[in-house]
Every structure is written in structure tokens, then in C-alpha cells.
Length: 230
Image (cartoon, rainbow, N blue to C red; front, side, top):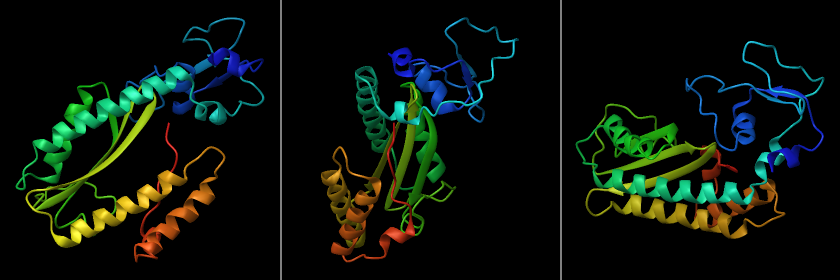
């Protein structure tokens, strides 16, 4: 199916991580998390040994549009990844304690994700003192306290699952409860508006309007509002 999508394109070589994972149907996990995984050569004529220079095309095709159109097998892998990530996240949350550090909370969550075949390019934790201040709380040695916000982006087979959860150790403070409720309303508004053919600009307008309806018209300026994943 990948070959059919490419049609007559080639030969060309790419080491873009997103292209590589798509061309290899989710395989191609890098040995070093900080480097490009592999170079993939697309050529109908032959395969190239690692020690030979691949052909250099005058232009490398843009595969982004092809990557965004998930095929049936991609959708199945994505659903499985989402379900497994949710289970791992829930299990990790159940083990957290108020005296635990933000570092420890991240370790608790990521270890369960890694056990299910994920890598975790993003792992965030902010306890009672830091979560209200930092939208993207990089973990520290500070204790969690009465509540915490935790977020991960977990990758498996070239697909990315992002999750954010808030945990409260006991009845949540009124301000926390109000913020979580407002965020849920904004999230619901943009999900309800997400339909084939809508543009990101149109959805951003929905987000801005939803914040205003929650009495927080300037909130969208404090942090980027996410985007597509896949």
C-alpha cells in the first residue's frame, strides 16, 4: 500500500524520522533517541547496501500528506496504542503519593509505558506548587503535594499518543476543580467541531471562543493549543 501511494516517485533517499517510520510501516525505531533513525532509499530497481551511497534525487517528495492519510492498518495500530497508553497511565497514577517528587512521578508513568513498547519523547509533571504556574511543567525534585498535573507523549510504531491527567490526593481544591471543568468544556467544544474539511484556523477560532465563554478570553495566549498528531 505504501508502494502504491508513492506511485512512480523515485529513486530518492530520506532520513527524516517521520518519513522513515511511515515508509517502514511503523518500524525503524532509532537506536539513539537523539538521532535520525535510518536512511531509507526508495528505488524500484535495487536495494542498497549500507556501505554504498544511495542515489540522490533532484527533489525529495513531500510525504507529509501521505503520512496524514491513515490507512486501515494505521488506524488499528493507533487505536491499540491509545488504549494501551491509557491503561499504563491509569496504572501509574494509582501509585502516586503526595510526598513523591515530580521526577518520581514521571518515572512511575514512563516505566509502565516502556513496558508496553512505547518510547516517551515528552514526559511532564507539575505538583501543587508548579502546575498552576507552568503550562508545560518540566519535572523537578519538588514534591507533588495535594495535587499534580501529568502529561506524556508516547510513541509506538511511529504513532504518537498524547495524554494529560490531573490527580488529586483527596478532595480537590475549588480552584483546581473549576480549572479542570473549564478546560474540559474547551476541549469538548473543539472536539465537537473537528470534522473532515475543517481547517486548523477554523478550529482555533472555536478554541478562542470557548475560552471566552469560560470567562478566560486571554487564556489561549499563555500556551500553544496543540494540533494534529499521527
